[in-house]
Length: 414
Image (tube, rainbow, N blue to C red; front, top):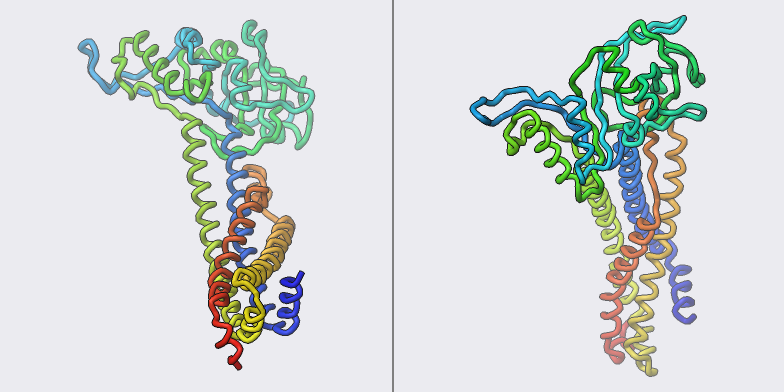
């Protein structure tokens, strides 16, 4: 209580000096809280966008040989067929696998509209791997669609908007794909997607792979999507799949150029390191601002010690232990940075709320989502920790100086 009264006395008699000191700490804390919140918001937004294509999957593109094998030189194209995919289903490290056939510039027609889009032929498990979640009332391709070569189609939400109208429910409607009637069974639920190949899923049209092969007379797969049993099995699955293709088509099993892989496990890890590094950079910049404010607090405390030298001398002359003197000035420094820190966090939260009011282009928000700063519990803990460290550093040296004052000399001080 004595320490608090002493601090209140100092606040009342040194209004301008204490106000400027507290505002310096507030600005430093607002900087660090806002920068960390911006970094966290960007990280979460990009994470949602990157996983929009699917999580824990590997995308495979057939390539060509780069090594001589059994007397045949390099440069042979790799062609993966349906039998290869079914053989790969038996690989122990493989959880799910789907072929993906692609047809570009395929005509799609309703009674009123005619457009040209990309059509893909896929397996039923493709929907789960690639986060093809249907809107309410629809569904994705199922096993019977594949087995019976049904003429059914799952369309992206932007395709729906082009062929019908925005927000319409065309499930059950007939559209003509390359002159053949197909029944719409589902529309893709809007999702944020920043990682993709061959365009956004919102512009995709998906039919059973068996139907695609029959309609377009296609023998070879354009892309393979598979899901390993776990992240640890990803590399094993990739090597086993490449070895399988090599053994079935007469390629060197050591030839790593037979297929190209996009491992989403690796992409997510690399992305995480980049954005966490960016967040740390923001935190360091904000921390330096707060450190400079802490230096200002320390200077103020040194001035305070000098001005109160006689008071300190009287206290020590009547028996006050040096630890009491140290504690007094430490408490005053911590109170100063705590008040400034609380005001700084309030400023940061206010600015975050104001950010919500800033309009952003709809086309940008539809793809990536709205980038909004996020003040999380971890950021709050970090801010409190940094604040306490700054407060201790700002108070410990002036407090130690005060405790070393000679009472006799202090009583003579004017």
